[in-house]
Amino acid sequence: MSEKAEKLTMEKLVSLCQRRGFIFPSSDIYGGLSGCWDYGPVGIELKRNVKEAWWRSIVQGRDDMVGLDTSILMNPRVWEASGHVASFSDPLVECKNCHLRWKADDLKENKCPSCGGELTEERMFNTMFKTFVGPVEDDTAVVYLRPETAQGMFVNFQNAVSTGRKRLPFGIAQQGKAFRNEITTSNFIFRSREFEIMEFEYFVKPGTQDEWFEYWINERLAWYQKLGIDKDHLQLHRKKKEDLAHYAIAGADIEYNFPWGWGELEGIANRTDYDLKQHANASGKSMEYYDDETKEHYVPYVVEPSVGADRAILAFMCDAYDEETVKDELRVVFHFHPDLAPVKVAVLPLSRKENLATLAKDVYGALRLCFSTQYDDTQAIGRRYRRQDELGTPYCVTIDFASLEDNMATIRERDSMNQIRVPIPALKDTLLAKLAGEDLFVLPEGGKIWKQE
Ligand code: ATP
Image (tube, rainbow, N blue to C red; front, side, top):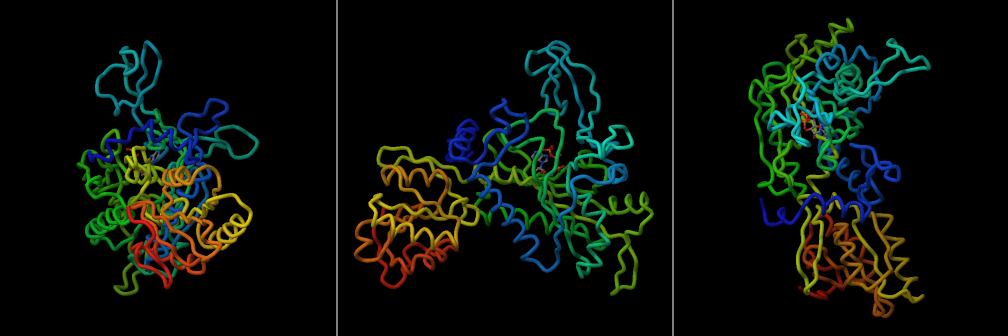
């Protein structure tokens, strides 16, 4: 594990997330609800940015992908056809002594991890949540909260083909809530009962699935690295035949080195034509695709990369976290990639004096139209920098008394803590360029280097 990751414990992360408004336990004032979390004012910005970055890379940035947003509740026949009613289950064991329940797969020994008691035989526990549609709570009204978003895309395959105007190979992508009644939840937002999933089904001509499987493994690994995750903190785990889901011919997990060790971040499955064929058989509707190049009809094969947005957020937070000593004081900082940083710019007037505040508020008013921007005029400037470091804000703009004379402001960079001074009218374009990756010391006209650490 890297020196940086060694500094991070889950306790520290959970506490920082709560203190700075990233993530809170759900229904906290009532003692919470296990496996459910609320995103705070800063966390929601981070989550939106992660989802946006994924959507831009998978849907908007490509020619061969369409998006969908399908309903959470679906006709229960969907889950019968897909195999979820019969087999979306985990092996459950119960302690005969303290009655705590455990997922058998997670246990290293055949005894209760809490009290050491004897365990019952395994039984399969279906992890789909059930509810009822309409006012009568009987078996005919049962529906499920979706445990994944994939099925909404499979049942819309023909809608996407006819309205998306795409030829094979092409994909359908979706982001949305998923629910799993996990036997145990753990590690903060890593395994929760309500979470958000980002996944796509990439439909290909049968026979070409293996190359597309490899293609998507590489694309997805590259995505995490492009957004700042150290490549040494990622590894690919190819699944053995016996560990594959019943519908898959190959599967690989992208794993991340979390503070407690390697864990699945994203699953990539080579899913064959299983789902489309199951839905064709159960619904009586064709799921065939007409290939007008080869004049053939066939059911496409599918490659599916699937990641929990919350798990991705946890990995991005763990990787961006750092602690360093600056002038004998501890600096905690999130080195988020600028695209992910929840706050891009903070405007900090050196004093609350009226003329300074007026200028600072004008600057803030102009910048907030372009970036997620905070205004902070409390406490000493050093403290405000530290607060922004803990949010991962890439740039702070300081307005001081000289600004009233020369109409210039200071930009302070989070990572290097270097500062430049630029004319206020050039602030917006300068920040845009820096957020897009330009070096801090490339100066606009009239700008100068102010302070170099
Ligand atoms: P695990 O083995 O961790 O239970 P899985 O193999 O069941 O996961 P998939 O069904 O492949 O997971 O789900 C795809 C992705 O959804 C996972 O890689 C993970 O990022 C995310 N995910 C799955 N279950 C949860 C959960 N309970 N909480 C948060 N994210 C989850």
